[in-house]
Image 1 (spheres, protein in one colour):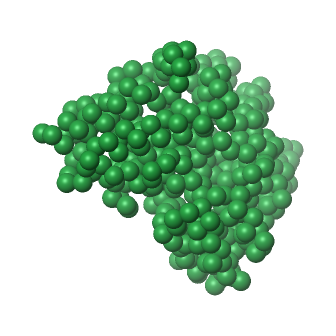
Image 2 (cartoon, protein in one colour):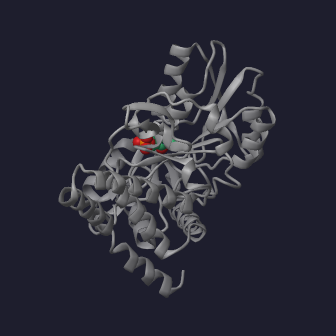
Image 3 (cartoon, protein in one colour):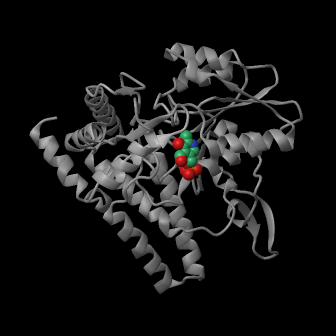
Length: 393
Ligand SMILES: Cc1ncc(COP(=O)(O)O)c(C=O)c1O
C-alpha cells in the first residue's frame, strides 16, 4: 500500500471508537460500530419518540425504514430488495430456511463437518423432530477447491432435500467454491442454504450471480460492522415458494384492516418476518454499509481483506512455534496454532496484557484472528510481537 492509502486507512479508522484503544481481531465474532452508526440508531430512536412512537404516520415510516434497509442490502449483495427478509442474525436466517421446507420422515439433510455450533444444533433438532437423516460432508479433509465440490457431491442421495454449508468456514477461514457446489447440487435437484456469517461483508458477494444459492443467511453485526440484532436471509425468487413461513405474524402478512383478518403472505421474502422489531437498528446497519462504501467498493475491500490476511499469515509464520492453517488467505479469517502453549492462555494473555483481541476455536484447536480491510500493518505487527513476547516469558 502506498503512503496515501495508509493515510486513508488511518483516517477511516477514526470513525470506529472501538479501534482507538486496542488491536482488534474479532470481526468474525462482532464488528466495530462506526460512531455515525451509533448516532444514526440514537437519532432514529429519538425521531420515533418525537413523532410516535405509535401512530399511523409512524407505521408508514417504519415500513419505509424496512424498505430502505432491504434496498441497501440488495445494493451491497445483489438481487432484488424484495428477496431480503430482515432477521436478527445469521442463525435465525438458517433456521427460517431449514424449518421452512416440507420435510418428510427419511428425507436427507446434508451439512458439513465445519459448521457453527448453533447451526449444527438446529440441524440436529430438525433431525429429532422431523425424523430427517442428517449427515456431514467431510470438508475439512479437502486439499483443493475441487475436493470440496467432490466431497459434497458424493454425499448427495436421491433423498437429499437440502445442502447446508458455510461460504467461509468459521474455523479454518477456507472459502468454499460456492458457484461450483451450487451448480452441482442444482443439477441433482437439491437446493442450497448458505450460512454467510463469515462471508457477508468480508468477501465480494453477488447473490444474484456467481453466489447463486437458494437461501443465503447473513448477519450485519460481524464484518459489516452494523449493530447486533440485524441480519438478513436472502431468498432466491425461484426458491421463494418452496419455503413455508414457520413462525408467522403481522409483519409477514397481508391483512384486511376492516375485518382484522390476514388474507395471505407478503409477496417477497418479508413474508418470513414476524412481529415488532428494533427498527431503529436498521439505520445503523445502513449507515455502516455506507461508511464502507464511501471508503471503497466491495470488490476493492474484499481484495484488501485478502492482502491484509496474507500479510498476517506471512508475519505469524516467521514465529517458529506458530503454524498457520492456510498458507494463503481465502478470507479474512487467519487461524493458527501455537505449539508448546495452551491456545486459551495465549488468547487470554493477548487480551489482558497486550490489548490484542483474538479468539480460540475448538476444532481444530487453534487461535483465530479476523483481519479486516482496515486492519493495519502496525496491528499485525503488534499481534505477532505480543505472541513472541508471551512465548519468551
Ligand atoms: C459460521 C457461523 N455461523 C453462525 C454464527 C452465529 O452468527 P449469528 O450470531 O449472527 O447467528 C457464527 C458466529 O457467531 C458463525 O461463525
